[in-house]
Image 1 (cartoon, rainbow, N blue to C red):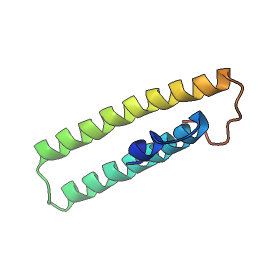
Image 2 (image 1 turned 90 degrees about the vertical axis):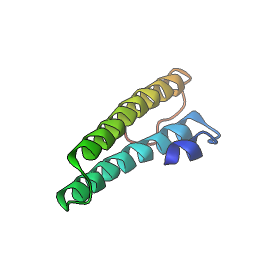
Image 3 (image 1 turned 180 degrees about the vertical axis):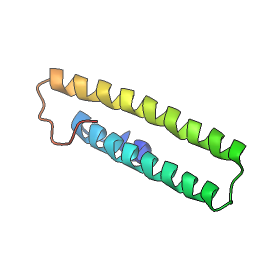
Image 4 (image 1 turned 30 degrees about the horizontal axis):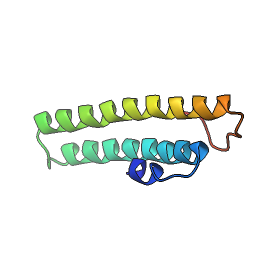
Length: 84
């Protein structure tokens, strides 16, 4: 995921952009898990466990991104990406 790439970001807005990409990718991952379950490639317990993990990580990422955005908003840097 992009969180790893974002940790090497030079600026806070750049990190926030990588985190936004990571949020979109987590939504895609949840969609793929749903498909795997619907096609019978995954049991209900595994689907539930993996989906809960993705949602938990997404919530943590949202919080982290909000903190990053708040930091650079306070510093007066420009915001060049959409808000989550």
